[in-house]
Length: 266
Image (tube, rainbow, N blue to C red; front, side):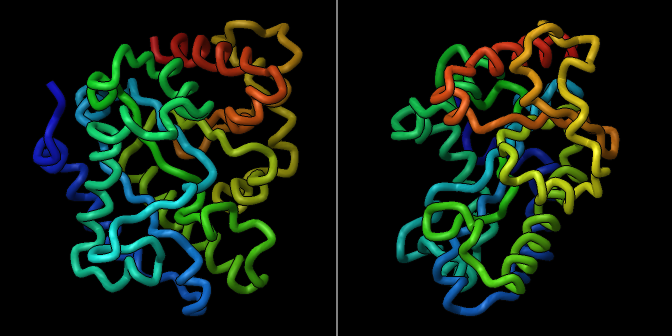
């Protein structure tokens, strides 16, 4: 039986998330023209499976959405229209949980490499099972820009503002949700963002997943692409986006990450 939206709201942590979003989600200081090109922010709800399995959850993090929002009568499809909706935080938090529970099964994204990796690592047996698995899902950037990455699209001033806004959102989510592991499918193009978020040292990329005693294949050369670091008690694993791994025939990296995370969770 699938959980209802009410089941998600019955979890106190989701009300805490909602209060946090209300405190900051309207604060992005960019031009109106840029607000029209940025998508509605991806807002999270923790699923029952995550709350019911403390210390066992994996936080999946992508780059940004690929078009995200609602219909024109509510939040619309841009940050500008999102700001006009009086119940925007509730609506978009519910949009994520509704996607997981009801829309993922028929989504065009279901067969994508990202969601294939998700199913493998979280060990989802069927679509109805997803909300009862211990996972979280968000992105390193709060919005997409015209359905794509913000990279090389904004002025230096607006890029800095957007990164700081996304940092505030993402670090707030981490602080409230307190995951044990965070899997970053962000690739090297977003490493400069991670460095700003977490104050990483210059040599942080010298440490890869093979340094962990739980690594299932410490002699696998391709794992040089899988970096790892700690921040505030959270173990982060950064690798390429699954789309890239699939194109380059590097899916074994996902297999090793899955096996290693299972060992770390024991």
